[in-house]
Length: 285
Image 1 (cartoon, rainbow, N blue to C red):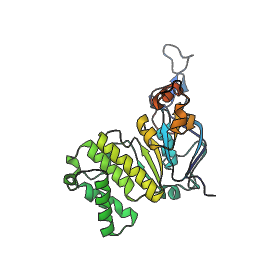
Image 2 (spheres, one colour):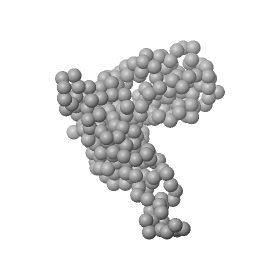
Image 3 (cartoon, rainbow, N blue to C red):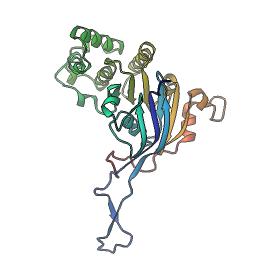
Image 4 (cartoon, rainbow, N blue to C red):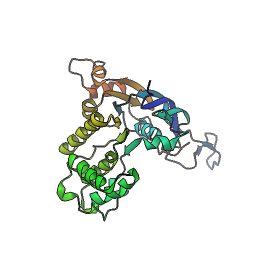
């Protein structure tokens, strides 16, 4: 049998609190001029999360801000190492074999798109430069770049304009195009359509479905857009306060909420409590 595309087994991850460095607080025994200090407790981002993602599945991660979704994606993408537990991508342990794990995947995250590009160059020039790592032939690369941009709906008039002159949404589309360009076996998408208009969002959804249909790509999608999760995902995992609180198909999840017209948003609100503390900074404890 083929291994799961992604396996997360009892993953635990904690970070240092963002508010103070070093990790200290005034002890309760300290006097008015107190100088006695004690360590602050680490912030637990993940508290023993386990699930498998099947090859070719579009798998959703939903949860409140600070629930652990992005930390999960960073563990799966071999950008972080779990404090305990195991994460594997197509059978490759991301802590022991990070290079092999990363070779199978493409990532798109929530950082400002412009930070990853040469702003004086056009989308086509940026993508041609970035595509060198994929070992594609130059003629094939240019054709593929133009095809991806067109299918994502970026206007022809923007293909050769400097990135600095494009809107944030257009820059985001170029970032998504770069993620899709090599047609990776595993796509890790963190809020990929958050800044896009409805037409661009629909184009991204269509491209994701097409990658799965034509190349058997596996997709992990972290999103706050519950309509997006319901429309795209075969199964949805609900994460809250670092724990997996539900995992099922969108239809089955909706049956958990009372009423015949329950939505995925109703399920989300019934299962989650929201962040217990201010968002943490990902600095290992």
